[in-house]
Length: 391
Ligand code: ADP
Ligand code: MG
Image 1 (cartoon, rainbow, N blue to C red):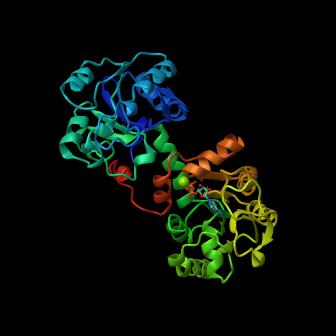
Image 2: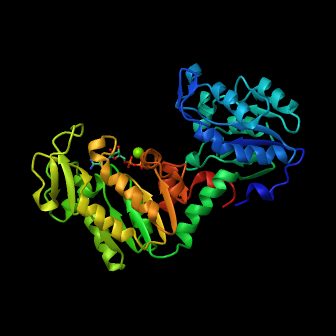
Image 3: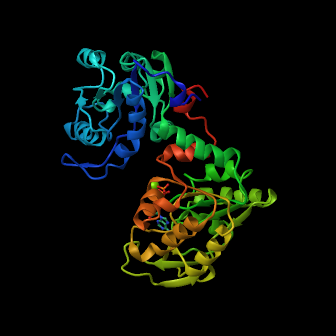
């Protein structure tokens, strides 16, 4: 896949697809991390003497022009961060936008309006793709969060430019995740948690030949425990996946992969409970209670499994961490991963939020910006946006 530093940019017009989908409250940006993270790619392009056109989606307007999902506040913030003028386009395609893009001089910046104001974006519409592509000679994909989507600004547009490549953010994602998948240092520990087995089983299956140990926690562990005959009270269980869960553990064993499940837990009758009812080993989970976090013995076990790891991929919290009564297991796990002397990769929207709240961002090697795309990459799926760049 071509990277940004391999493309001649001087005097060119460059269209960058970023993920600037930041949380905005009444016109005020609540978290500008995604904008900040995109700046190095923009600066690289501008410093090469190119003109810059930036595009992104914001929220889910479903083809309607919803003013509350305008990227205008992003243009203002970006202008401060770049220290140069950022022109805001009234739309992302059309004659007026085309003239604005054509008039850009090297070093100038134009931000297009929300791509999803047009239904052609999510439909990968050929005409919409052509219009986007007509705005520049070079296309740069820097939006890992949407590479699993065959959208016009991710896939279709690449057919209408002279050259296409990955930006600095996307390059980092592909290099870190690619290293873990293709050439990991061992022991390699996969930590899977979160709400559902159904969304994570693909990763477990795909990484069985690569990892040495698998840790499963969170609500998804319930289904695995049930498959071994453990009584998990009134906890969430995905009944239709019990057999597959058991089979995955058997396959892991046959491949010499160690599989670790929680050995104790915190429970309550309600996920909003002000405090846990107690700590229980799994054979004693009260019938009318739900498992909402891993217990202290599990924390010690998982810390030991991670202690000598050289590669860790972690997705999914260990419990219902949004409630402070059930956050200890996830915080403890984050601390154990942070201590690992090796490559530590974290992904998933909720896991990302958790690591930020714990203040452990700088202790991880890499935090992926993808949610769905992170999972699909690890499932070994071909991602349309990455394929469109020539992989
Ligand atoms: P990510 O977004 O990092 O991929 P998920 O979305 O799969 O993670 O899972 C996160 C959600 O799982 C959180 O909302 C958390 O409350 C929930 N969760 C984890 N463990 C439990 C549990 N034991 N019981 C109920 N909910 C849980
Ligand atoms: Mg989530």
